[in-house]
Amino acid sequence: MKNDLKTRYGSWGLVAGAAEGLGSTYSQVLAEIGMNLILVDQKKEPLDSLTSQLESSFGIRVRKICIDLAFGESVGNMMDAIIETECRLMIYNAAFSQVQRFMKNDPATLERYVQVNIKTPIQLVHAFCNFHVPEKDQRKGILLMSSLAGSWGTRLLAPYGASKAFNHILAESLYYELKDEGFDVLACIAGATATPGYLASLPFGESKPRSAMQPVTVVKAALQAIGRRPFVIPGFKNKLVYFLMTRILPRRTSVKLMNHAVGNRYREKLQK
Image 1 (cartoon, rainbow, N blue to C red):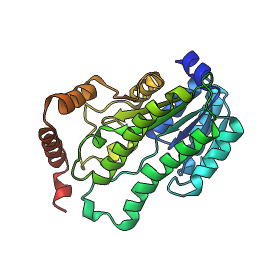
Image 2 (cartoon, helix red, strand yellow):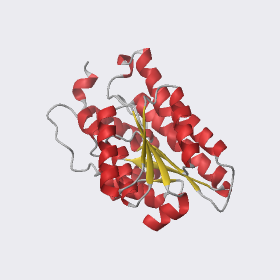
Image 3 (cartoon, rainbow, N blue to C red):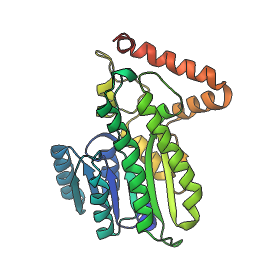
Image 4 (spheres, rainbow, N blue to C red):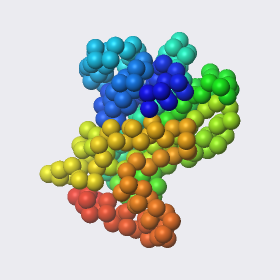
């Protein structure tokens, strides 16, 4: 992985949503292979701690951008750092998510879904591509985190699933549109992953499901797949579920099964 990524994308990478979970793991894995990093997150203390740990452990350079990715100026701040460092690998991991009935969301919450999960990543991708003029001999990487939740309409996850479907289709479309212009675009369609956000969303008293993947497994699968295909589904069980639900069963049946599973797990939220 070391030679592939650094040779292909150069010495700088950006991770948006870097402070915890998958973002922190992306940062760790890239630092281990010697890539300098632009780390973006609104959580100052975890971001500061991660920066210190990566600089001291791996001797890399880190630029921190502590900003809420719902803010419009976040794209400009990230692009300033990308332009200054000539960064050619951009990973958008940030996401806003709540498990609750759709009508429990107020307008501000719905706007946050749009800003963090849709508007900021599409504008960042557009600005990133405009900065990097097409050069077939100098590849650029764009990795967008999606989710299996974006594959089916599921109660309690409507705005999250819809926004993750957006990122999957965006990445898949751009993979084909931009691959001959020097861009590698990938959607990582992750299943349940043992991140702080996922574990906090579980019903009270439920421990981490055995099916939840470790973040490092998801991250390595994504980094190994970029430049080779338009999307990747980490984990054999997740691949099997996706295959059965999209290739074998009728969509109507798949959607019913997924809604039944979510309803069973979060029964108390359906009653609120």
